[in-house]
Length: 121
Image (cartoon, rainbow, N blue to C red; front, side, top):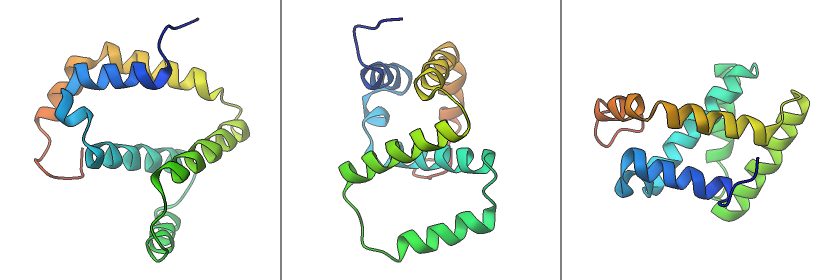
């Protein structure tokens, strides 16, 4: 399946459609949602709460990294994890985007119930 836009552009379009520009472009909101999904993936992969908390302490004891470099690191480690689990990473992303697009109104309703200025969904 060929697309005129990149995956990232199609996700950005959906975010703007679903949440509006303010939420879609909020760096802090996008960071919180990424962390939530990363933790859910780690949990699904068998990472314990204790290990996750130990890693939080480790990361926050070190100097802050560069967002661009850390994004690259996330992509490399995600690809490695997908390979270990025999998951086609791009296909999983396409499936999740399509699932989210089909649930836009449900996702908007959940967002409307969110506590304002909270990292929690």
